[in-house]
Figure 1: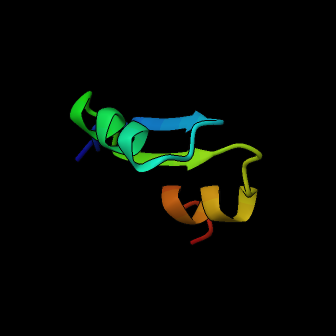
Figure 2: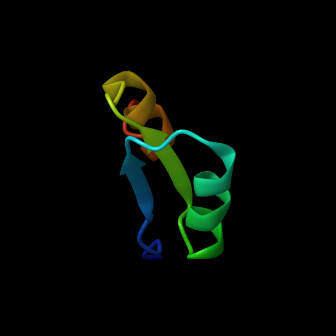
Figure 3: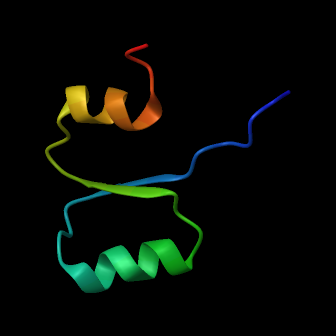
Length: 48
């Protein structure tokens, strides 16, 4: 079964208000810059 796409917001904004806005707009997750690529892999389950 094909999985739906993951919507990941990557931005320099780190405040909680922007996290909420991203979620309200349909984001599945939210990372701030600079991106920790280990964390990004974990969030996308690419390390399995």
